[in-house]
Length: 319
DNA sequence: CGTGTTTGACCAGCGC
DNA sequence: GCGCTGGTCAAACACG
Image (cartoon, rainbow, N blue to C red; front, side, top):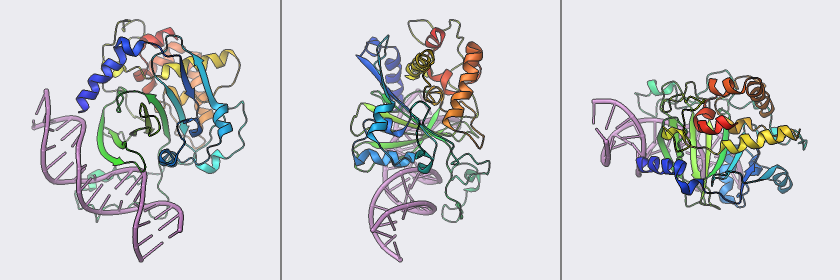
């Protein structure tokens, strides 16, 4: 099954069908409200999962951007930053600034998190019942999460990392199940959830949680100076995550001197260091901006986690 | 044999 | 307290 998907991903990347263009690519940033398919309760489950509750239409309008297609892949991405508790999101949003977000206390603690998956694994030779002295008085803490929508036939999009599926649950009011994946690399507890939009079955919603503590194990570091030909990719891991779109858009905004949203999260949701207590979307943006614009080539090459794994090298080359 | 998926059961959080 | 739901575990299974 998974293998079949992998094959499909390859086709997804390289096939002429995929490279054919659509009229536009719609990209929404970076609030949950950006999920324009959220129009019923079925999707709310996901929104709740993301910890967002306010779905203001006006905000939605504000953050949605449509850009004309220029070599636009048939992909729709809605990038999203979800790293804040709802109360933080309710902060007055300045239209120009990246509204978004904000500091998230959630999951950014240095404190060891009692997540059932990590260290617990070793101790879990015992029965499940007697172990799991999980959270005591503290609420469950989560890593910052980043979600984006991708218009794709396949549910599990290749992103250069290796994932192990550890669960699948039916989503309330949705015919499509949600799959849970964990990074297979030891000591890396990045997780991701994949589900298909109920309203638009062609849209896959992927939510990443946590940060990779390692480079992509699948894709050899591409040589951005020309390793990837125009004809294809040497690795399936070079899946052309529509991030490229956001990058372009980001640059557009730069040119227009219009403070963009923290698209940085859409480039590399997990590749940035966000271990600070004051981490927020804006600071992500600043971080990325700094790295990207001070040394575009090297910054991208160096360590952008998903970015360099998701964005085809020939795309980056163009940037 | 190693790796990954499937799937039922379990657990915690939350609302009532 | 109870029921619902999301998230996770882990045994069984499939596959190369």
